[in-house]
Image (cartoon, rainbow, N blue to C red; front, side, top):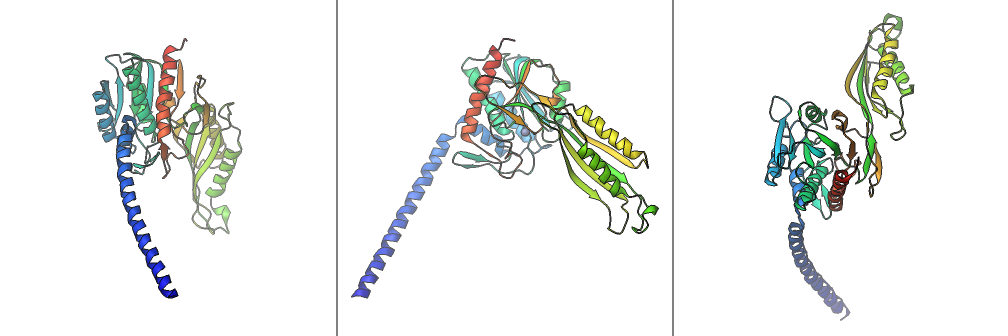
Length: 392
Ligand SMILES: [Zn+2]
């Protein structure tokens, strides 16, 4: 009797569990259908434009598809669109868009459409959007476009107030912005650049001095070092001097920082080293030309003995100091570089603003939230209106 009772309760537990499970399953199906409907309903023009941009792979040097998409999108929205090929391939195009025939504008709004590798597909999980470029910088691109369209549709901006500029190659060498600087025949009073700033105004960012050092030595038996020329010890001396030199600082951006990121030297522990190479990146807080001078002097000094040291300069940009006091906006200090320094036009003011954080940009986990996107549309609208009504 007792065992029957146990059996009976077991059966009833199993039965009710399976009924419960099928109920759960049905509920899950219902839930996923309603989620899907919700997701489609929820896909506002902003989320859709951002998704379309992130879904297109646009790793630096392969920006053709995203440029084409953007040119078509902006034309459909009624803007005048000019494309600008930055090299002879015709495949790398900046996009410049404005209302009517007013190529000059009071406010230039700009960001970049290339991304770092590798491509990471678009994925949405609730309020979060993952994918390459979701933050850096397609979040900025989508919100800049939507805020500008909103202001135009509400009659808050007219022809000649705003122009949009989207450039290629920011993540590689700034070739897109350099081309604009030389070849885009248009004038602007103010500029708003879009990069991830957590919805705050960037006070500025450091410049870059990126260089390599190559020391040629002469191999010999390590027991007879006087027969060789030791490239390693020379490189160590040079790096020691570089690391311990004093560099220009800046109140807002702090100290210049030195990263000897790659050292590649020697052949064996019992051989006097015939070759030593290093690659160093200095994040420059102030006066990049002074930093270049300091490094050149160190190399010159160390070269006096054998003249066997090569300094190979690969990247150089001055820091950018930006405007950052606007009512209703917080500010943020940034340690990353942008292509802003390559646009050397005379602006009355320049701002850096965008959704999402740089801490996830370039990572496998790049993401931002829908709230970030929505807030950035409002942020760009407010910033644009502020600049248009600003008395200068
Ligand atoms: Zn960026």
